Length: 143
Ligand SMILES: [Zn+2]
Image 1 (cartoon, rainbow, N blue to C red):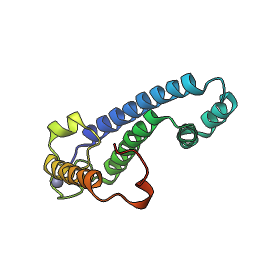
Image 2: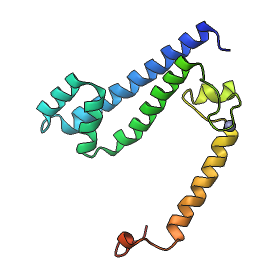
Image 3: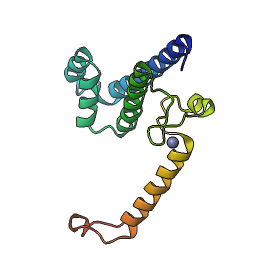
């Protein structure tokens, strides 16, 4: 069981990380949309994070997509901290090593399960690339 002190330190760190990412995302949004979307941006800022990510998606910022993924992972980690399941692999149920959590504080899988998943994803990607194209892909340039 995790100590209260450790839990609080982790929460603080995750929230800090989240804030960092948000600042970065907002900056990017202002740079790219500042002029044309000024009123939309102001509204979104008032409405909160969800409105901002929606606006980002509407305007097609690819960097945001990536960050959104990380932000969701951080939220998930914070939830798990609350529930007391933080640091436990969601796949096999063993404890994720401190070393891994230090590197990826929002990791939800132990290193073994993560590697297994990446191998599966790799196979999946290769199958997509070399497999039979689905109808909507015909006519498109191969990657
Ligand atoms: Zn595992």
